[in-house]
Amino acid sequence: MTHFAGKAVKGLVLSVAAVLLLTASALAAEEDLAVAVGATTGSSLRMRAEASTSSSIVTTLDKNVAVAVLDDSINGWYEISFNGNSGFVSADYLLIDQDNIFESYGRVNGDGVNVRDQASTDGEVLATVDNGAIVTVNALEDGWYAVTCQYGTEGYIRSDFVDLTTSSSSSSGIVDYAKQFLGTRYSYGGSSPSGFDCSGFTMYIYKQLGYSLPHTATGQWQSGIGTKVYSISELQLGDLVFFNDPSRNAGKACSHAGIYIGNGQHIHASSSSSGGVIISSLTSGYYNTYFVGGIHV
Image 1 (cartoon, rainbow, N blue to C red):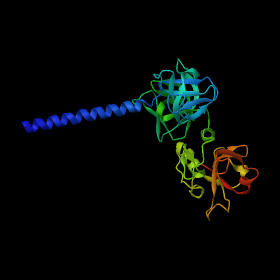
Image 2 (cartoon, rainbow, N blue to C red; image 1 turned 180 degrees about the horizontal axis):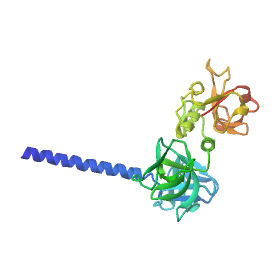
Image 3 (cartoon, one colour; image 1 turned 45 degrees about the vertical axis):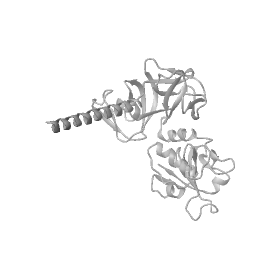
Image 4 (cartoon, one colour; image 1 turned 90 degrees about the vertical axis):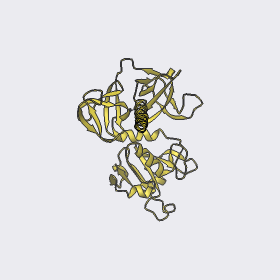
């Protein structure tokens, strides 16, 4: 009897531990859900890594931008998420939407995300959308966004699967996201916001939008992804662009990579004396001379 009782107690302990683990996992998941939506009231609003004015700046936000509020319980601060970034902003510069009815664009950040007929996982699946798809966000209900999809389907997506953004297209979204890192320092081999090299920058930007690229300019050019173009006039917003300077390519097909942002310009991580993430012209000078082509993903 003692033997079986010991097994029963052990089983009970394990069961309780499993329940606690599942509960903790559920709570952790819920922490990523939006509790409200707010609109920024100041231009160049600084999103910080921590709830402190001495904390590092994650990015800056324009005025009248809709952001997801993840935590509204911090005195003087809100934890927010916007365009794939999360951080903290001063409560003085964010106006909370009281009725949770608004209009914004959202970019889906997961593969095979379900659109349901109600704000619950019990809801019927109306459609499935892919990573990077743009939806119109109309309201927030119990941590779910009411959305309108590209082909008119209306339903609900859990808010942690949608990044609010200002862009109505995935190409513009790539450009908007890349511009947030202007001024980030150059770091050979770097592929994070603490420092980028050229292919590390393009790899990082596209990774956040659901694409996997190698960490070399030549590797990206030869990856087989997307459609290649060979004229600057054929480039579209968000296209990868490639260059080949024979003095720097070490016998490889490409020596540099960037992202086309329109108006004959590209954003890239430069190792020059004025380097870091900068914007440069494609229509004249060095980058025009060594332009190889672009890839529309």
